[in-house]
Image 1 (cartoon, rainbow, N blue to C red):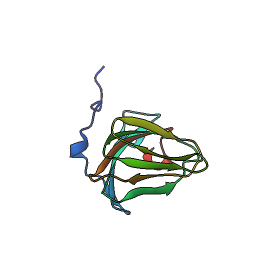
Image 2 (cartoon, rainbow, N blue to C red):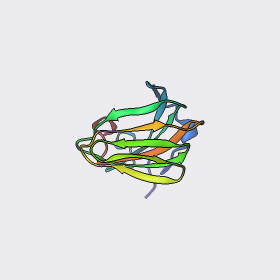
Image 3 (tube, helix red, strand yellow):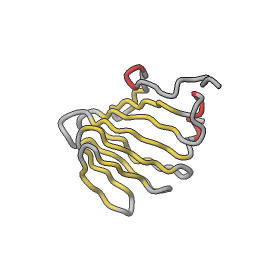
Image 4 (cartoon, helix red, strand yellow):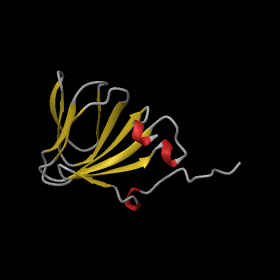
Length: 121
């Protein structure tokens, strides 16, 4: 049986959504696109001095992988840490968290939600 959809997507070909504070979020794999059913995956490119602001996921776990740049991650009630490239981290379910670009280059990271966020379904 032939796959209806290619099992990959090239991030460079996805336009992404510009958000404030300055960053671009690209939804790469999600149930609403077909293929995957129980996860969604994307990437953020966050400008120098900017951040992914405080937010909470009450129904989805989020895991992240820092590709390049330096970040400070802050998780409510847990602490804050400075991390560099090739570091995986997660935000606990229901905990407010943010990711700040503390480096001198764009911060590039990949994120995965399980189950997918409602707007990814």
